Structure formats: C-alpha cells, structure tokens
Image 1 (cartoon, one colour):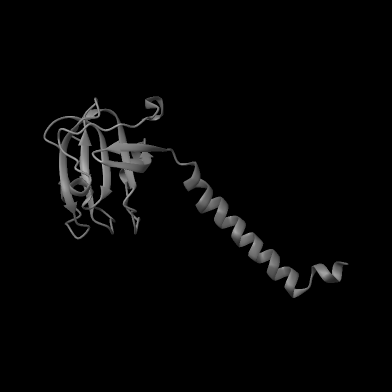
Image 2 (spheres, rainbow, N blue to C red):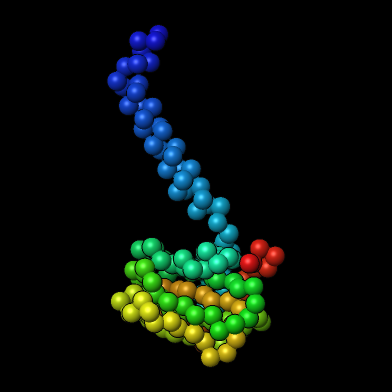
Length: 160
C-alpha cells in the first residue's frame, strides 16, 4: 500500500489538490467574506463591495481589471469630509459619486480615466460621508443626478 502512495500519479494529484486548496483559502475565500450590499442609485441596482476601513478605502478599485455594469464599490467614512479619490494603480475608467450623510448625491465626476495623472485627486466641494465608484458611463446610463438619493444598508459600527 505504501508503494501506491508514493507513485507519481498520487504525488501529482496531491500537489494539484494542495494548489487548488491554497488558491481557495488565499484568494477566493477572502473575497467571499468581504462585506457587500446592494446599492440602488438612479435607475440602477448594483452589487456593491464595501470599503469600511482605511486600508480598503486606500486600495479602492486598484488592481481591478474589469467592473461589470451592475457592480460598484462603496466607501463609507467614519465622519463627513471632503474625501479625495485618486486613480493610483487603476486600470479601468470609472464614474465617482460622493454622497452626504443622508445618502444624497452631492458631487459627481464622470469618466475618470486610469491614464490620468496618479497625483490628481478628485474632491467634492462640500462634505461627504460616502463615495461610490461605478463603471464609466453609469452616471449617464442610469440617470444619476445630484438630486438622486442612494439606498443601501451597512453597519456603521464596522466603519473605521
């Protein structure tokens, strides 16, 4: 029996199983455990990942190569401020929407290209509590205006 366990086929199968298990534990599982919600804004409903801490907010959508039309990132901040967004390490164009504490759209920047200078920071003119990042063109396609109000749920106790 020990001869069978040391056969090349068995060792290859165990190696493949180890790699698949590692990918699941290191890549897939952490993404499944990230907080998510649905975001209703304008005429759209978006499956939304949440960025609730400094690390996740700083990362934003950097490293993301594709964002489906029904996907978004929602950053929640612990307090109101003129929160800046930049395109460092971005590879896709996005629309950026700032919301106040009442979830009303207060400022929009459309079609921000990843080719823009990484030093350019986009900021609202008034205080915001949330920032939504959506695929470029979504603001126009989903009739999102500064009169729009977003609907979403999140636990503000998790925001830091």
